[in-house]
Image (cartoon, rainbow, N blue to C red):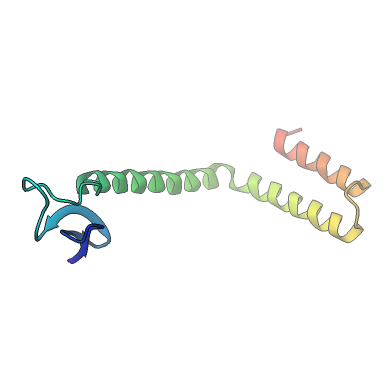
Length: 113
């Protein structure tokens, strides 16, 4: 457990694994109040971390579900988009017959026509 000094240098606070939880040590200011009053409460930080982890986990699960249900179609879309990009690079112009053909192919793949 590290102990850091507050801006005033009069009291410290604990940092456990990078989480500042405002538990001051040493001399404090005034009526037993810690001079580190601007530190976020440790429980709030922990709950924020839990929410962040939950969102991250949900994002990962969504990716797995999307891959299972749409993976092949998304692969086709990605292939066509890469073809368009390469075609533009090789031809050196944005508007080309090949681009229009590939855009139509992309639209047909996206909308199932």
